[in-house]
Length: 392
Ligand SMILES: CCCCCCCC/C=C\CCCCCCCC(=O)N[C@@H](CO)[C@H](O)/C=C/CCCCCCCCCCCCC
Ligand SMILES: O=c1ccn([C@@H]2O[C@H](COP(=O)(O)OP(=O)(O)O[C@H]3OC[C@@H](O)[C@H](O)[C@H]3O)[C@@H](O)[C@H]2O)c(=O)[nH]1
Image 1 (tube, protein in one colour):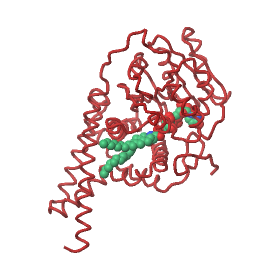
Image 2 (cartoon, rainbow, N blue to C red):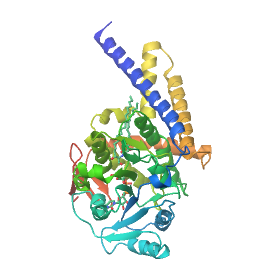
Image 3 (cartoon, rainbow, N blue to C red):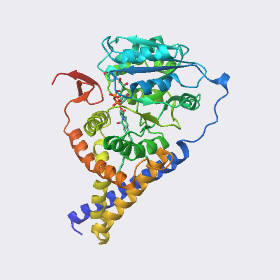
Image 4 (cartoon, protein in one colour):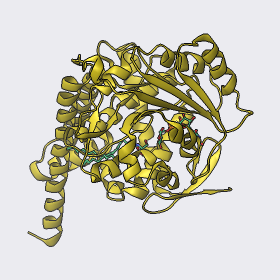
């Protein structure tokens, strides 16, 4: 055996190991998702239910904002307050909130106008004043595009056990018209759900802060919410700090239902590039793992490896690999959806294929580095995850 053939053999065996690991992630996601998502809960008795402060940081209006915010006024829960916040008094969201406060006079709701600057993260700056004013120790952070069901808060609270410091909700999407909305749903129901569910199943922090609940006393022990203003991925660092205090992360049985009224493929990609760039800078070990965890990259690598080691047709291996991966993703999305998918198989195939191909573009953009954009502001991300606002 030459040195080259030894190196190639070791490489091929490592690729097979990584490939088997990926199937383990598929398996864990399917089993954990089936076992956890949409399962009925046994709610705590009403006297055990803590009061909850829900903070809604808002920036601007989209066509679904009224419906999304109204769903919070219809929550069925004994004691909660709704604290809305906008960054400045010219924000059009003020009118929407005011209209809802007038429509539901019995709901305890307040609007905060103006930020308290604690760092470059605009969402944190927008939330500090309501956070400081929160009446209850249990805090929910919920982004503007989230739509809830009347029982969502009750279900979320039921996962807040004494050893749990934060309850996360896996992001998913409300059914909306248009290909971009379907594309977004397919992303969150396949690649994202696989990573998120498999990570949760083994206790790895895979947080998304668009809808989560935590206890204020624990965050205060870590220095308060202000501390997280220096990061854009405040969700990851909040969850990380909570686990370092010895608490577990819980996962709500209901996904966080995103229902933004404006969806475009370009915006979805910008968001994925921002998220990917954050992960690259704060978790550099994912730099290599993320690309090789994608379907086509792995199909390519495993077909060459098996062909090299066992002389199996690479084309057959590649096609079988893609087919089984696709079927696993289709099944997982059915689990997220809790029923049949709201579009045809052909539409699913189109959105899935596009997602699998576009991920190469997203990953290249992430690897190229550069500033990221969030709500019209540009940020430079430093290694470790701190950010600085920059002018381009
Ligand atoms: C040979 C294959 C090896 C596969 C290794 C797995 C590599 C993980 C690949 C992709 C990770 C994608 C994570 C997607 C969800 C992240 C969402 C996100 O970016 N959220 C940000 C914004 O809200 C947030 O600030 C960042 C959070 C950090 C998440 C880190 C996730 C790590 C997931 C690792 C999964 C491993 C599961 C292992 C199961 C046995
Ligand atoms: O400058 C800002 C930016 C955002 N926000 C608010 O933050 C929320 C999330 O904003 P977007 O919907 O633009 O962003 P994303 O959905 O990508 O954010 C999500 O991923 C990144 C995490 O850091 C966030 O916690 C999570 O919410 C919204 O409610 C928005 O109104 C601000 O209040 N100020």
